[in-house]
Image (cartoon, rainbow over all chains, first blue to last red; front, side, top):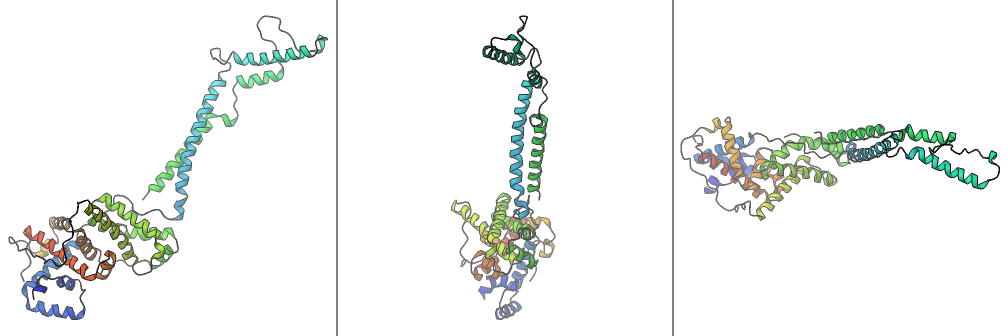
Length: 201
Length: 192
């Protein structure tokens, strides 16, 4: 029975995959054939060795995130990252804007001559208009011409208030740079946290 | 062999992603170790397993019942074999030998240890591991699916889309080939 000596029925016999009639035939043969008994023992040993091989582990999780609870985390991460960038941009805008108007009172700032000069120029134009409109009775005009050559004359209360708001630099909350920086950092941290959670095994 | 969680399978089929993830976590390691033996490299094995899980989730509605584990293994094995076929077209992997070719049993070259002792030796397991890499991928896949993962011939036939006779032949040839490699290293069979 050359077929059985080398054939695949021995493996199938070992694995219990033979039909009863075939199994019985192999049983009979094994009882009479020493070499086949040896072959069977070897096949059994090999099968045991293969079964005992160490199991490889993946280096990372291979399970995809398909559950609904994860579906919001991805867009949240993207949104946070984008928001962080946007907040950072506004922070830079407000910081530059603040540095410009905040130096309104300084002597070396390029802007400083403009601040007092602008309201004065505007007042000058107003003065000219009112002078042109009603030239005759001087006592009816509230304006005062400047006596000296300094080019500065007393301002109205509105002009003083406006000038002060530009000089002293008291910003509204929306133009407060640290606010935007804090928002940028918070959004950035939220994006990083979402990223870590998505990457967690 | 662990039995499938019937409740989780039903929930997964109904679209419960969390249930599917739970099932996938239980299959992750067996699937990876099987695919790794078929394709050979960890990076490729990771990709194949991940793709298989995603494919299984997308087609969960077509799972008809039976062994969920066998179903996922089938998807993964198909992808692994596709990877091998692509390599074969590039000439990197040899063709599988024809089924009707006789199986050769190598003669022992020298007296060696008994097989009972071998099972406890780490170096011989390493020799078996190395011998597996010399097998054609189809034989290796069938042998690993049988001896490590415990699938039946019928299940393996469905998984690899071949006849049961082919599965039987592949498993037998794979075992004999591994045996021949060990014999070449001095392994000696038990006295008959």
